[in-house]
Length: 93
Image (cartoon, rainbow, N blue to C red):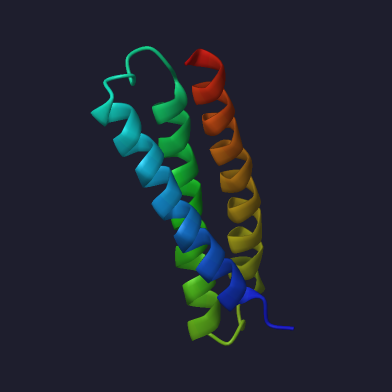
């Protein structure tokens, strides 16, 4: 099963969630009270990396296996970082 389109779709949606969290914290002026926005920026970077490498893996027909490996690991890492950002925001508010 070719899982790269699924990772690309999920990672791009979660990237939007990261930007909503960052924007919401800035809009409510809570970014100075918590580390959630910094963690959300790290999650956004990791999810962007996942989107990029998933796209490249699709374009190259998975000829370079390292791209799919980076996409997988950066997706999982970004997901964990996003969860940490949400937990940090929930605890600090």
